Structures are given as C-alpha cells and as structure tokens.
Length: 168
Image 1 (tube, rainbow, N blue to C red):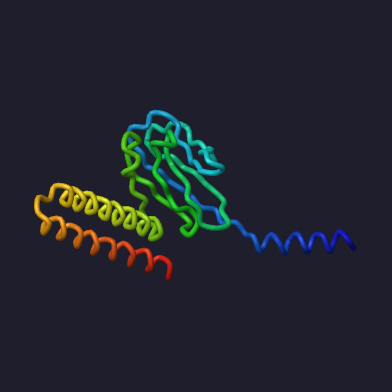
Image 2: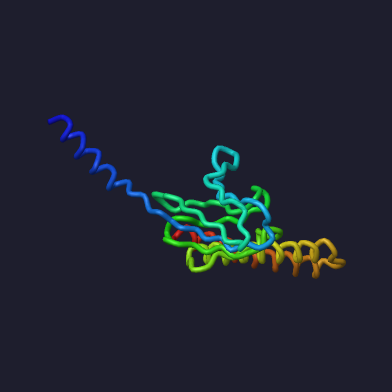
C-alpha cells in the first residue's frame, strides 16, 4: 500500500515539474575544435554539454529545462554567445567562432527580442557618450545647456523603457 502511494506521489510530482527537451543546432564556421553549451552559475561558467569538432560546422546539443534560462554557446566563456533556452523547442545558432558574440539565433522570437533589447541599450549608451562629449566640449553656457536638455530627453526615454519592462 505504501509503495502504491509513493508511486502515485512520485508520478504526480513528475508531471508538475515536467522538463522540456530543447534541441540546439549550432552552425558555426572556423571552430576547428569542440564547442560547449555553458551555464553561468555560482559566479562561474560550467559546461553542460560538449560537441566534438565537426568538419561540417554543425554542433548539436540537447538540454532539458523546466523554465526558460540563459545559456551560452562557444569555445570559451568570454567568446560565447548568449541564448535563451526553454520557450522554443528548437534553436538554430549561426555564426563564426572567431566572432561568436555576433552570432544569430534563428527561429526564436524570445532570442530576437533579447537581441533587439541589447541593440536598443547599446544605442542608448552610444547616444549618451555623444551627448556627454558634446557637453564637455561645449564652449558656451547655451551649448552646455542644450547638451544637458538632450541628456534629460535621453534619460526620459531610458526610464520609459524600464517602466515598459516592469509592466510586462
């Protein structure tokens, strides 16, 4: 009787924490060596899976996940590309191992949104640097005030972006 209850309890909890298998296909050029699927955890990167060197440049991974998480594909942690794994059943990463930070994740609206957000933040940073330089190089109080006003507009846009993310 106890075994039956234990078995039912085990089956019930396994359905509640059902893991999804996500297949990751990485089409990478100029690798020449193995490629890793890594996770950043406890202040360091650890390899979850390793695909051996492939002459055709196709590296295959499978990972089980209960919820979306951020993983990395690459040969070294500092030269890896981040991917969101979980919502999509299959991911396709395309790139070059020499410039893996520029790799593209295809067929994934989550990764496309992540890439768009990174690009938007980079644009904010670039605009901020331009405006700060403009303010520092300003020769008159009017030029300095114009740069400060532009910085205020940029800060407002950043805060609006932050607020929009909080509401989602």
